[in-house]
Length: 325
Image (cartoon, rainbow, N blue to C red):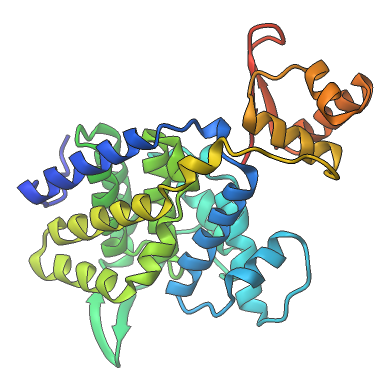
């Protein structure tokens, strides 16, 4: 490995990593058991949070309405930003964290209706302004491709804990500022992606909303890392944000196995609710509980599978159901 981002592993960082790992272990829930409604709620929090950091004024209620296909009043740019974020986060688990091609595709999805050259590295110099002052001058455009290749190679070869390597990547990405716009939301998206490859539950924990709640400290940590020429301060901030996210969402564990009343539900939604309770439920058991014949259940399952909301893992006899995003 040639390129080594500068950072230090302090006792505080080691303690944070240990505590996060312990808390995640305590949650003890499987991705496939997580309530579809809770997934949707946290997705809304994630999208709203990451966009509000960048100045988008749409609320969680408005983002929820957009996600449901409803019309919402707002500027064309803000609405396009929400649509782009929805698509990017829905396809999160399809991206390879160490692939430049995947990174460019994600940026294209995220910013496609907002930025003319979405999905392409910038071709001109950029600086970050705050309060009328330039607080960061990004590396020259001709260096961006090489710097990103080095960073992704480091990420691929890194033996550091994903909690650390994802935070280092996030900081280095913001330092390089590879795109003309959308760098902040891409850095946060990619850290979530890296963390979700370690623990899939990170797809459904609204880390971005916690960062939004501590936006001033987020920017201060980035600035401190710039000043130190070392990512340690930013790693410390991000690990604390992750801890807060886990603590705030710990009650999710109690909701996973809560009884679900399927009376009045559409057949497809009732099936999803039953799968949340028992991923090994059979089609006949679904039919008995919902009060539909087996052919109706089969058609509903096919519809859910075509929508990517339900899939069968392994055989009908020994496998189980898994929920899509």
